Length: 587
Image (cartoon, one colour):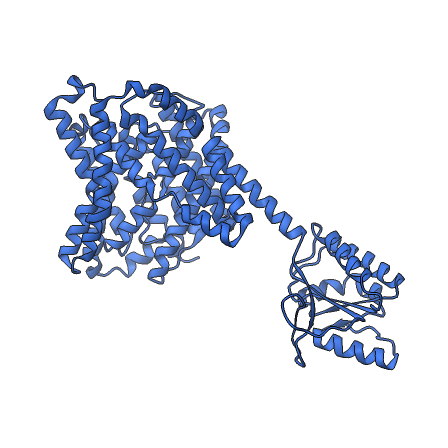
């Protein structure tokens, strides 16, 4: 294995150009401006103190820069993982307590270890096992849960954490009378301000000419959360709103670099958090690989899924030992990093350095910062995650996918995050089994005088009443073997002149033992009715296995034909001469 495959940083460092430095520096700066308020907001969403978000935006970025394969992925705290973290830690400790923070370190460590273990067994292909509808349903529902969970901070009311939206809305409705109107003004005004920047201001920035003017305009738009934090903090400090109006503030944030932390080894705690850690590792991996692959494709850069597991594992291990909590690659942040001109992970190193300067110098300025402003940042950041179009598209294109999306969405919304995802996975797997257990098949006939054979229900074709040409569009295995047997038997029973059944195997990649036995049973029942069974268009690997079985002997006098055309021509000629068909194995 090449050194660059073990440490991807060696790959881009070796070919780094001085001309790329400006782009990386600009992207790192813009991403840092964006990540500071977001990281603090997401930490509060996870139930962690705000500095934990900042800590999780330093060492993890450096670790990913060394081990990750994407040159523009921006790693750090994200909304979805923060929500999953809060859901995982709520049953084991009180939010914000020392025990809660200690449990978060264990969770990050487990996520890191699971990611590295998956990379060791080269399990990067796991990205294919969760369907897009499940991810879409989870993301949309999680965005709604995240938004509603932050209403308490925008309204300035205290309320316990709820597992479902129903309970959350019921709690909110019962406490609306406790609303702090000054806090609501800060939170609501912050949402309006950020939406204004995202809408008209962002469109104005795009219309500007390319160059420095456009970059400055885009930077101003992306700095909106930081501007909101500054304005809200200044207002609370200057007017003494925390004292006079009861506006809640963040309070003391420690000054200094992230401390070195050692996750506790508590067997019961590790076991309790293990399922959630596995889920966070998988969801974080899926989110990161999706955005890393999309960004890499724009520059024809390859992203290695197994190396990504190592990179994300290293980032989470770094978070565990520096006072953070689980992290992953973020969609919005990575796109900003890419658009701002990032060429390599040196941009992430610049971001980490600027965040480190922030925690060294600026924490005293954050003391009057109202959580309502951070909640506004979260609410606006997750709005785009609600994807109504995905459901409409799924409903129009494939209703089983729409069912999986809806099940996941409702499960997360009405029950809880983990249960919702498990329901979505269960529905997806159930639908997959249902589809494979009842595969599509087609009775085919000849198109005109050609050698092409197509579905009799879709094309004007010629058929021979003495032949049943049936194409099965799925591999044959235990789940659908009985279906194929009963289908062919039923079709044969409707054709009194039938003499030959030809099973077209152009789409069959595997025939397992259960399907083999089912075919043998079918052949015997057809023989009893005076019908001969044949195969056509069998793939080489499938034929190799069949030759090691007794199926070909059971088929006699049936044959294995190279093509459907050859089967029809040979069988019609044999019937015309009244000659036996014989047995021929395909090559």
